[in-house]
Image 1: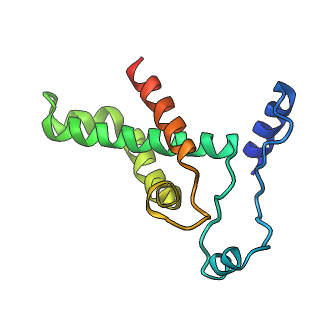
Image 2: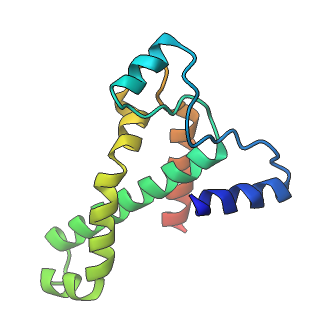
Length: 133
C-alpha cells in the first residue's frame, strides 16, 4: 500500500493529479454489489496504477515462460539454469499465482468489472519493448 501511495505522490508531482486508483471500491451498482458479495475484484476504471500492475504481471509471466523455454529446449543444462536463476524462478513462480485475478480481469471476465482492453495493450507493449531492447 505504501508503494502505491509513493507512486501516486510521484504521479501527482509529474502532473497526473487524479490517478483514479481507489483501494476500496464504492458499491453503487447492483452488478458491483453482486461481485462484491462473491468476493470478485473490481477493476472497471482505467488508471495508470492498473497499467503498472498489469505490466509487472505480464513481465513476470514472460520471464517464467522464458525460463521454461530455456530449461526444456536450451543448450544449457536444466541444472545450470536452476543454479544461476534459482531466486528469480522462485519469485516469478510465486508472483504468477498471486496475479491470477489480474489475468482473469484482463482476458477472461466479460462483466463491467474487467480491466479495459487499453490497459492490456499498453502493458503488453511495455513488456515487449522492455524485453526486445
